[in-house]
Image (cartoon, rainbow over all chains, first blue to last red; front, side, top):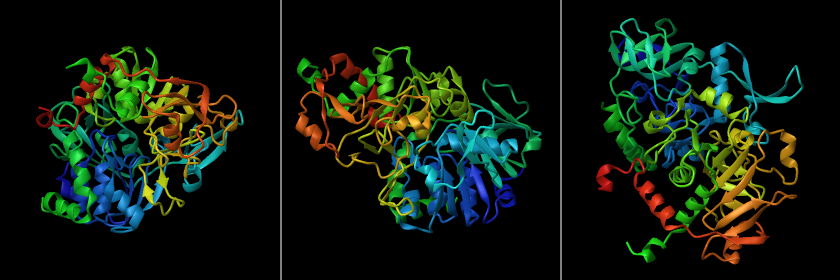
Length: 265
Length: 264
């Protein structure tokens, strides 16, 4: 266990490929804000849904490449900083490696499994095939059926947020569990921020438990996923997701907001 | 409220009601956020109480009491029959063909029901408008038994040929879809604020099968970027009933993200 600033400094270096996961739920915002404060640069950001968390990292110039499958503000509209980077190269140009959700999930699963690629029924007829080098096809060795193959994801770092850790650093998360298990097990280094440390992890239905030895750092950050949420601890701040549209639409308004709420924090 | 006001509805409300009607009770439906989620939850409150809602966040059989803003709102997990990870959602539940209806929205749709949610503009690398991207749609469009599409109709959104095929409908038309070997049969119905479009039997080109009340064929054609043909048996969509409208309006008022303060 370590304070968040120490843990981020230890696991995230300039030029790293990092995956901050959490599928709408348990998004590790506090950890992303620490990466922004430490002014990391040239990162490759991997995430199924870039969400506000990568809109912020992209807008602050931390990223040069994005690996993703759906880049919108859920239920609200565009991610304006993401769009500005792709459409106008602001603040720096952003290269894209674009997939579908099924493809991204399978890439993590292959990475977690120590396999070089995953096989799925996917992408057939989609123009994504022509734009994304990590999508290929493969013939089934048994039937000859042509299937999609996607290369494994093995990020340098995975960062996730969970509800609880125990004193030994074992971690439990529950509710919508996304691809966090796969992200942690596919990465070379892993950091988990948690709502709280408890004496004993009580089993929860559908929970994901990650043993301490599969994780490099645990940091206690209460409400560390806001404006996302931690099931059982907080509600998704939908009003903030709606408000982000106006905050992020304009470059200056965005920078002022980040100065006041992230850099000065 | 007078009965006259009860029969007053918007094109958007007609679209949502028509989409809800297309979902039959007991069907298993993979639901996108936005219009599909609203329509599916409306259907569940009306004629389809046993409709199974699957959101890509892995909430299977979600029964939200209010409209979620995102596919990952806590209410979906709290009310679901099962909550599974994303790998399992796509690999175990969607890919083998367990889902009856894939319910999608799109930014751009073409005459063969191909969907673009990726880029507007000639160049992928230098797009005029960068859209959110694929999400779950390519595999939903491929692997659900049938696909239902709901989106607003305009010449800008209903185009001759999408600039980028994110998710395949009928490809270049005719039997072009078949060469991909998909489990699913493809888009069966496209519901808009103007009417209902369905693929023709041979060409698979979308033609107009129903016009919503108050809309003319000329208006529907003017709202379409290709030469829209009306089917021989062109119908008139029954207007929303008082119950459909009141249920929809109650549901819309519960939309998450509108604060309690703003509602009260």
